[in-house]
Length: 348
Image: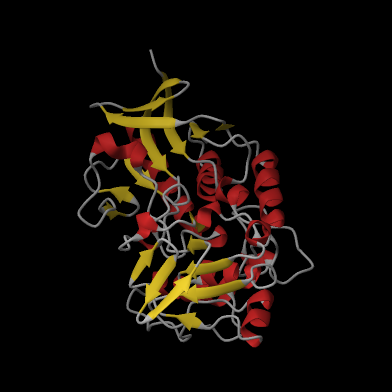
């Protein structure tokens, strides 16, 4: 007979930890299943030079503030240590490594199939994020390119690209940060994007973006953001911009074995790094058939419209404003925990 719990949280990164914290505070029996061998979620797989967009105080999970760091924008190693210590501090019921293969529906429970056996839960909270589902656009000739192609999720630092000609595709924060990271190492690096770069003012960071997301939550009809742009000008990014290393090329028309064609120009490349975003990692829910034509489930209050027992935390604005951020996910997790506690109490 499957082990039974009230709530199974799938994913032990920042969203899973915030959800577990609030479930414990309201007294809900639950377990967190994480497929990684160590704490830290997706932060454990990012490149070493990655930096937060906000100071520590604006990058905290519920209950315990992230310890201060001497840098305004803390490095990823600081985040990893914080998530590890947060999990231990609250003795959260995380089991790892446990891979969730599938979730099936029965009238009374949701059956969670894992590589460690089956578990029966009244509710499932999917908190797997997006890191495991990188998106690469379809480009004519991409399969013929003789060089290396990788996604930003696979980037581990500039050392592997010494002396190479590299195209970084994508005009968001990841593309700009990785381009800045490669400037001193690669022979040549170009930022390729279909749109112009839109920098936030240099004195604006993630704190302001979170405050604006909070304002939209309080008033859905609030005015659009006062700041035009989405790229945070971290110190390394500013240095690269000042030396002219962030000049943008138009998107590839097609790729060829030796590189890419842009208009009349043919550029020779050794590597293409795709910084083209992610999709929600929801393959474990495929048997429930919750996805719509948009690629994501239809939700109401962070719960599936088709099956209210299935909940989502931390994937982006469709799961709550700023819910994919360290500081923002706690708000979503708290509201969901309170709702589930009320339902479980009513059911006895």
